[in-house]
Image (cartoon, rainbow, N blue to C red; front, top):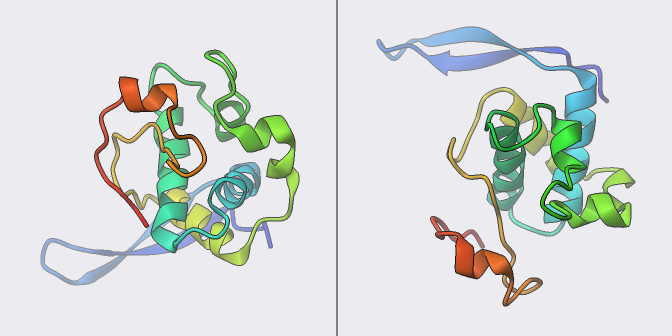
Length: 140
């Protein structure tokens, strides 16, 4: 299930013709990204699962966060970043849709290259995020 280190990705050229590019990612990245997506967005729509994956990927590329998916998931520089890492539920087997979402994110799909946080108002109402971050999109 995890042996996907090199994947063909279909793209569109500027002339509208299909092209193939290679997306390279390692097994460890897929393993952890699928698990955090599943733990954070189990039961959410597929777009919500993609959003979690985008947040993690975007953090690896932002100067304020660690450089690897694993380190981002377990980052606690400013407190617990992902509660499933703290509770241990990140270690549960991921859903099939979480694996698909992780693969898409690792292959370069992004809802936005600037989202660094997500928020579930039914779970974390009144959190610091409502006072300190600007909402850009609502999913689900």
